[in-house]
Image (cartoon, rainbow, N blue to C red; front, side):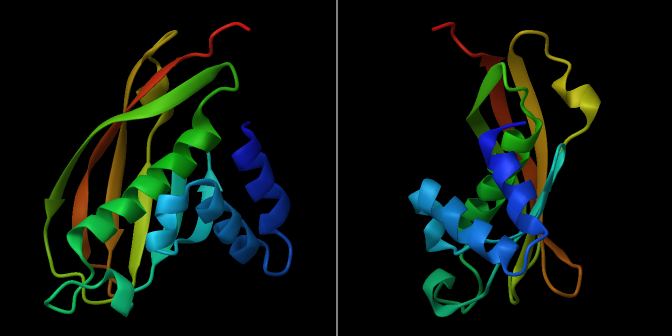
Length: 156
């Protein structure tokens, strides 16, 4: 279990714990603050967070900007990776493929998922993380895969 996942587990059950974790997470990776992620759930192979539809992430059409959606998806993927990567290993994003399926007209639930089989890469290799963003009515607005490269931590 990584420090990030351990901190989430410690805070999640406390009053305002998820909110506190969300702030700390955005401070650790400052670019994620642009979408102000509200973390809902983190566990091995699964992470969820909400990106609110607010003025700062909207495009000229009044919907959540496509790159803001991708930012939320990458944040969810990072939480999943932190909760799933063995302590003896490290990870880094290698690529992202997404499809825009519908207009992002509401707050968005960003979900990242893997299976145990996805992580059977031996000492190192690519792991596909499935991601999707859903409107409050359940409509999937963006879906795709973020590939992360997992490798053993170097000896010190």
